[in-house]
Length: 273
DNA sequence: AGGCAGGTTCTTA
DNA sequence: TAAGAACCTGCC
Image (cartoon, rainbow, N blue to C red; front, top):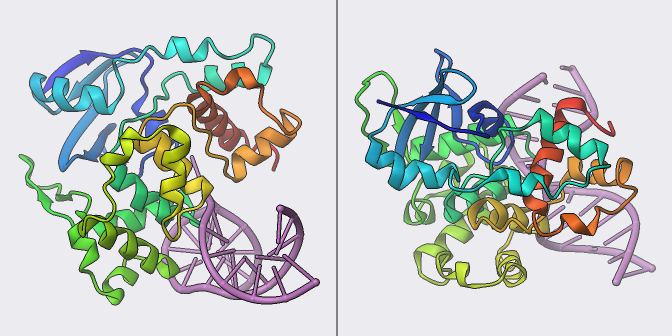
């Protein structure tokens, strides 16, 4: 157990920002994070102080990167135009949002599943998949049982009924197809990080069940391409009602980060609904 | 209780 | 090239 001072960071805002599906409330005000086959418990002591259930070394080698703590979000926020009232408000409501550096494979499958699903429903599916096909994570506390996100091989060999039981619906074949291609080596997600953002998105969209929105989410959340702007129903509403059809081009470079503030604020306040 | 959910694909002109 | 229907199922 360690304590750290972390600025511009709110585990709650991040957990509810829709970019990740495996950060859940642990009960005593703490949050449980599952990633990289590891489990982390994190609890806010005050606005800038956090208690984390890991060693100092694990924090530095795993979680510091995962939470993107070496990035100065003040730089991204500075890209917001001064007279853009909507974005300025959105930023002040979500100061603690960061773009996590999650695993491409997990992002690909999670966002394939996300289509036509609510966030709670996505969480349920991802959790069931992990319980069924993921490796059990060892924890000191025997009470919380936790499973890693399944490996490609595990999903590639799964039968239809098992996958359907995870609530995948018509997405079963999309998921299994991506898993097989990855397990058999036809799709090398780590190699895709060599591509520039446009090529990366094109390549991802060659997969069944991956359209522009899912590919953009994978690029942003799995490959940390901050210049990617996933446009979902919420962002569509924001762009139309607030920005008259187009975001300022000044926002392009950090569109993914700024989008996250806008998206969060839009959902909180039901902008455009 | 029944519509809708952070979309994508397939079909039709 | 573009618009429209169909798609599984869980959640509110």
